[in-house]
Image (cartoon, rainbow, N blue to C red; front, side, top):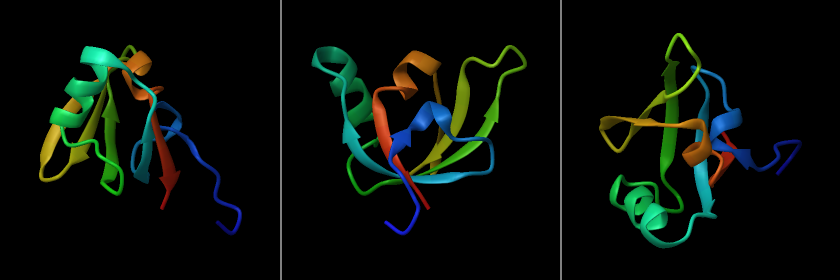
Amino acid sequence: MAGRSITSLSNLEPGAFGEVILLQARGLARRRLLDLGLVPGTRVEVLRRSPGGDPTAFWVRGTTIALRREEGRQVLVKPV
């Protein structure tokens, strides 16, 4: 990976991109993330964080979604 490590979606800063590698969520939380388009191989852009820092807006497959920090921690990405 040439210096690029796997991290969670929550750790990316606004303006950064990541490629979904793995979902650690289980049950309904996993189903929701998959329904939002967060499947392995998907490219995600971090748009902005709310003034309080939670939730964060992401650009996924042509739409904007918002995830809480706890949800973002369950999505492992490779920074691109």
